[in-house]
Image 1 (cartoon, one colour):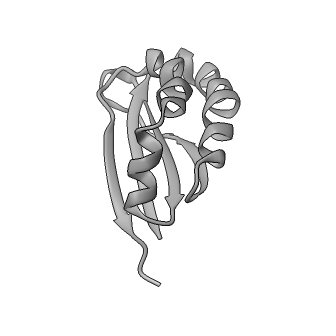
Image 2: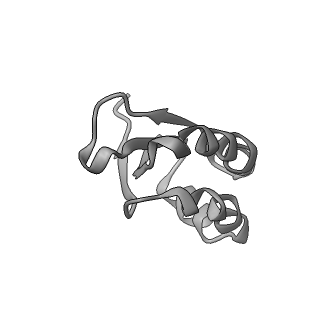
Length: 100
């Protein structure tokens, strides 16, 4: 199992809009990808530089191959197109192997 962590930041006034877009546009698409075992979003509670709010999306995948295949699909770009407009920082994406 691979955990993919996608981290960025948004303006505080964009948090609720980001939640709405995430639920409506991102979650259904990710859940339909082969090899994706779910995605969730976390909203930071601590103060951030420049008064931004940290937003993290954590998804679970069967393999790196499944992630690579999904991120090459047009649905991936479409799912993120609206929420990306809220990003105030370039996303940092990290992958971790789950140690059973």
